[in-house]
Image (cartoon, rainbow, N blue to C red):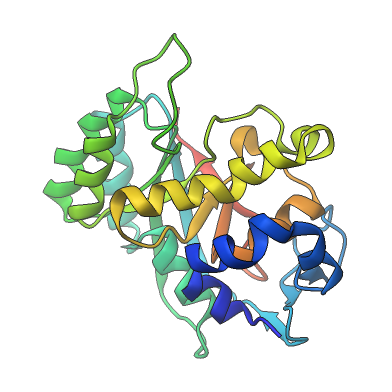
Length: 257
């Protein structure tokens, strides 16, 4: 039986060998995690893993900030405010480790996230460096051709961010507006968005991609369960802060405008 640790650690190898070629069989074998409560219950903190064990996330005091077209002075202000409030900065991957750790977590934390890989977000790098903070950048796969409107990171810059110690998170391959609808009408395309994009990014940066951001914040129980198969955690666009009983796969964020 496949355990969560094996899924997260195996990452791309598990996907290639077990999931993408044989999705139906994987479902029939019961490797998809099942939630204890409905997806509408955003306070759910327990997840039954494929090996039958119950994963319980610890309570934590953390703020995850979400940036899109903002950087520079706005980022500097957010970091200064969080530091003044006594928060320690971590990446989302590190935050997940704290939440899922065997020991109870104490302290106040903050994470800086950037969605979509807009070119303007390059302005964030010197600000992060100045404060000694590592960010989490949720970007599309290397195959992403853009939307014809905005400018985005080059693949070389994505590699640079990873080499500088910033976390690269997955934000699908083509940023579909509704993964729930895509899952229903074109399951093969859906697999490439959620799982194939992870493989592309890992191949690009030669490092694990452990966390996921739902495009437009759209998710349901089936999507969350799929994400839980191969990612350590996921973030949403739901406004709020992480306090007691967080759901590691539907983390809320504080939008910065």
